[in-house]
Every structure is written in C-alpha cells, then in structure tokens.
Amino acid sequence: MENILSNIGTQFAAVEKIEKQLFDVVKLKLNTGLEGYNVPKHYGVFKGTGGDCFGIVGDVYEPTQPKLILSSLVECAASSDVDFSQINYTEHKGGKMIRFDAPIGKISFKNMRGIEDESIVKLNVQTGFDGHTKTTMFLTTYRMICANGMKATKTEFAVSYKNVKGNVGKVLSMCEAVSQAVSQQDQLKELYTHLNSIKVGQKEVNDFLLKVTGLDQAQYNEMNAAKRKRLDAINESVAIEFNRTGATAFGLLNGITHYTNHVVDAENRQDYLYIDSGVELNDKALKFALELS
Figure 1 (cartoon, rainbow, N blue to C red):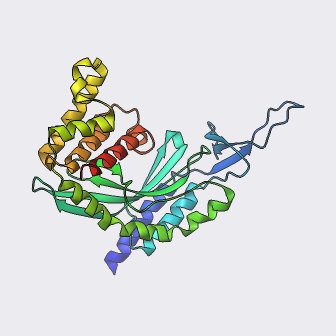
Figure 2 (spheres, rainbow, N blue to C red):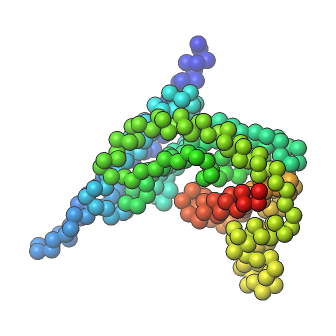
C-alpha cells in the first residue's frame, strides 16, 4: 500500500509541475482602431499573458485550452492503468503548437543481429492555436538501442478533430481513444518484426533512398556538393544501423530515423521531428520500407 501511495504521489507531482508551465489561450477580436473602417469577424489568438499572435481565426474557432487537455489525458490514462509520472510537455514554435506525451508500454524483439531491440511506445496529444492545426492523438516509438524516435503513422489508431466550438467537448471524452492506443502496441510489434524479417541488398538500399529522399546514387557524380553531402550522411546513418540492426527493411527505416534524430542540422530538433519536414521524411521511410515486403 505504501508503494502504491508513493507512486500516486509521484504521478501527481509530475502533473503539477507541468501545470505550472501551461498558459491560457485567448481569442481577441481584431479592429483597426480607426473610425469608419469595419473589420470582418476575425480574431487573433494569443497567450493570455500577451505576446505575438499565434494565428488569425474566424468566429467558429475555439481554442482547446492546454489545461483541459492535460486534465483529460491524466484522467483517461489513470482509467487505462497508464503511469503518467513520466508525462512530458513540449511547446513548438514558441507555443503556437503544444504536445503532451507519456509512455504507455514497451515492445521488444531480437533483431537480425541477434540483439534485443526495445522501443518505448508513447501516447501523444498535440494541438495548435494557428487556426489550422487540429487536435490530434497519435503514437510514437523511441528506440532504446539508438535513441531514435518517430511517429507511428501506420497503425489503425488515429484521432483528430478541428478546434471549433462544437468539438471542444470531445477532449473530455478521449478515454476510449487512450484505451485504443494502449491496445495498438501488439500491432506495432508485428509491424517492426515484419520489417526485421525482410533482408535487403545494395539495389534495394539505393531504390529505397531514391524514393525517400529523391537522391539517386547512380547520379552521385553529377550532384552538387550539398546533395552529395546529404546522401553521404544518409548512407553513413544506414551503415550505422545495419551494423547494429542488420541489412533489413527495419535497418533501412532506422537509418533514416538516425539521420533525422541525430544528423540533420535542425534549428529545433523537436519542431523538426514532430511538425516540420522530419516527420514527413520518417513517414516516407516507413511507407517505402513496407513496400519492400
């Protein structure tokens, strides 16, 4: 009983720490301040404390408050026996987009090199205040052997809705989605073990990289210096992953995630991996790795 109470205390301490970082979001009507100039029903979205405008929105837009998302996520995680003591909060683009993530389990199998390959599965809830970004819930995996993270886009699990007045209440009923997310871990393990079973040679590697990056190894000598440098870096990442993972479709996938997680010169790594071109590159890598089967 003492351990249970201690764990509950740790979880709530983690949540309270995040609550102190959250901000309120306000929608303010825009006007010119000049007599005779009528402004349509457009609003600016801001932090409650002021600062730069996150986006220009219409009358139907209603920001989903960060505190509401957090409280609902914690409540639903508790009902699904998810330990939220390691819940994290990230602001992207200066708060224009925000994301909560919490580990919900692990998947593990022996890769082609005979090494135990373990990944932490995380549940993510993301929203934005630019007028375009939906509130979404998705899974990510964080591979322990190489510290590579990526969005798990090929599961059946996906939840998203626009931030409009009629949808604000949906965040209060996310428990079914959380439960569904937890159940998707077996599917992710099957996906990764399937990719691990597909052996690849140099032709498959070159074809894969052409599809994912648009860079053709056969045209290497005709490339400019920037493209050659990029292709060299990607090939090096693939070689690193083949060494610890094996020459497989799973190794190829992780060659790209190694490149996006550790090599690309990104101004903000979290923005790059979750809302910018990094997530697109990882998603293409998973798509074309599956086509190798």
